[in-house]
Length: 250
Ligand code: 6PG
Image (tube, rainbow, N blue to C red; front, side, top):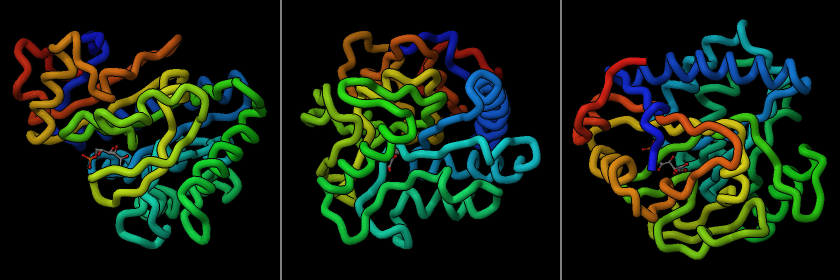
């Protein structure tokens, strides 16, 4: 169930993207002031592209040398493939900003098995956060999307991946193309300091209504409950069209 105070509705996805930049500036500055670096995990899909473009255009106000970018999930295809999340983020964001290569923590998908890829990504996360054993990393920000079926990252409804309680990153197979993926687990997602869900388009209206209004929803998105942090939903008007009594604007 969404805490309605954290839902922000905008006229369109451009409005969402502008507000993402505002939030990013604030969250990253706070993290850098506190501990010298900012860690974010990003998603693929259509919705965040506008936000990535606007972040790229804000290069001068952001400290990219102190920023470490990870992926919330990745499709198991080469980086040059049109379905690659890393490829998408590179095209719209990374190739436009001065972020050091070592600050970009992509998920390897070439010359490796799906299982090895998930293990290697988990090792990379552990190394960056200097954690061992049962410790869970705390990302400053995780940006997520929502699928029409209520999936988020690559955590799909009814799958055993939702029950993972030990691993940080796992391989998944799903009916949605591309069928092989790597995803952060709920263990990691629910330990973030801030989550921003980006939701755009009329095709998301039905699932959004269930997530907001059905207290018993067991969809993957509805399982995102931060232990200490805040979950924001940044939504455009078409996606919110089936909800009643929504306040508009910020
Ligand atoms: C992916 C994602 C996925 C995405 C949603 C929403 O790689 O497919 O990370 O969870 O965020 O499917 O995608 P859209 O923004 O395209 O609607």
